[in-house]
Structure formats: C-alpha cells, structure tokens
Image (cartoon, rainbow, N blue to C red; front, side, top):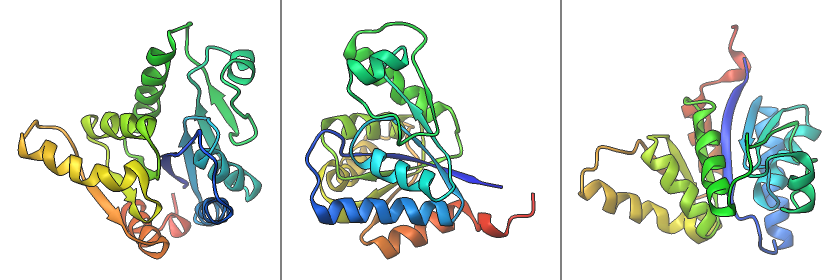
Amino acid sequence: MTGKVIIIGKAFCRLSDYEIRLYEAVGEWLAKEKLDAITGSCPGVAYLIGKKIIENGGRVIGYSPAHNLRTHKNVYRFPTDGCSSISYEDKKLLENESFFHRSVRMFMCNKKSIVISFNGGRGTFSELCTAFFMSRTIILATFTGGTTTTFFYFSKLLRIFNLGYGSQVIKARSVTELKQIVLSLTGDVNNDTE
C-alpha cells in the first residue's frame, strides 16, 4: 500500500540553494517512505519535491489550473517533469477561478490525504484556507517561514468563531519533527500488508 500527501508551498519565487536541497531531500524521503504526492503541478516547492519523488520511484499526481497541456506549458509556463500525471480543468476558466478550482479538485481527490505546507505567499494562504474549510489535516512546516508560519495563528482565530470547519493544524518546527508527524499520521506504509 502507498500513502499520499498533498504538497503546497512557495511557487513563483527564487529559492535559495539551501531551500532547493531541503525540498529535494523531502522528496527523496517521501519516496523512500512510499508516500506519493498530489501537487498543484506548478514550479517551486511542489516541483522540487515531486521531481525527487519520481526520480526515486514514487508517483506524483499534478492538478493544473490549465485546461490542456499546451496551456499548462505555454500560458502558465508550468513544468511537466515534476508530475507523473497531470489532471487538467474540464473547461477554460478565468485565471482566479482556475486556481481556486484546482485547489478544490486537489483536496477532493483523496479525502484522507494530509496537506503539508512549505513557506509560500498568497496562493499558499488561499490553498491553506481551502484545505482548512474542507476539514483536511494540515501540517505546517513552520521552519520554512512565509504563510506557512502565520497560518497556524490564523487557524486559531477561525476556531474562536467556531465555524464548524477545520481539522488538525499541526506545526512541524524541524525536518525531523515533520518526518515524525507525517509517519504518525500516515502509519507505517512500508510494513502494510494490504
């Protein structure tokens, strides 16, 4: 049996050499643990992690905001080699609509998948809000900064209003802690006999 995680995070920014090594190491680790990924099929964090998962024998399902491969590559300028397969929108949508629809499709595809967020800005924040309102378990890799760090406090504020949404929002303060949390939530899929 193979588990799945949904990877979101920083996409349209320059990444430092340290960040590149970090995200590639996370991808290698996820593949070693037989955890496949679901991503937004975009550049940045999801791309680096996805590419390493694939290189190490895992699978990555990408959800594109585009309605076909040509638009994915030429209009959005998204890479294709960070995903094993890419799911496209059924029809043309406005850009803001397409990113929202992609997020919803990504979180609906496997309701048991946990969401892992790395760094990020407004797009990641939007995806975190979508995941929260869809009651997905969210792990925030707070050691990477950005929206991922601040969303923890935002989720607490939402709980004050008792909106009836949300699941677990968990902080991972280090790579070691992230690995422990992911394994505790996904179970030891390496030893699963199904």
